[in-house]
Length: 110
Image 1 (cartoon, one colour):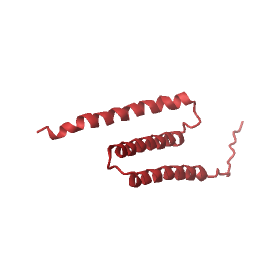
Image 2 (tube, one colour):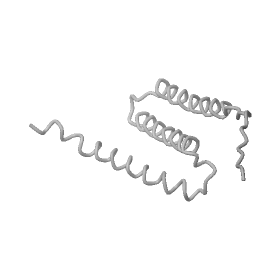
Image 3 (cartoon, rainbow, N blue to C red):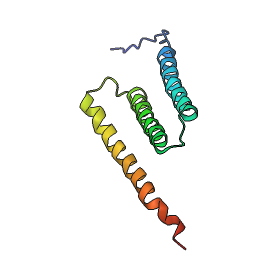
Image 4 (cartoon, one colour):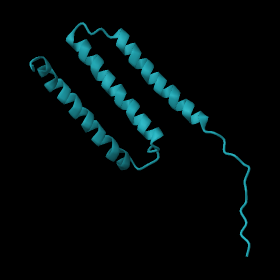
């Protein structure tokens, strides 16, 4: 009762096409962020908040795209993706709120 194992010399092609697609999409979003940084004036309060809001929005778009591709969640059920992403959004919101509200007290502490 011999046991034989077949050795296959066939190799899979590397999936570089998908990686280049991800690279170009992330590069395009980053380029839009740079354009926003240098084109929108932050002289007035509206321009400042518009710039900050767009940066936060584009950062979330990039993070969702990275999570979908590199954590292989793109083909999962949507509820699974939201189960992972929503807690991260709340943690980032909590950290931003703490920095915003508690960050002003650093000058008062001796």
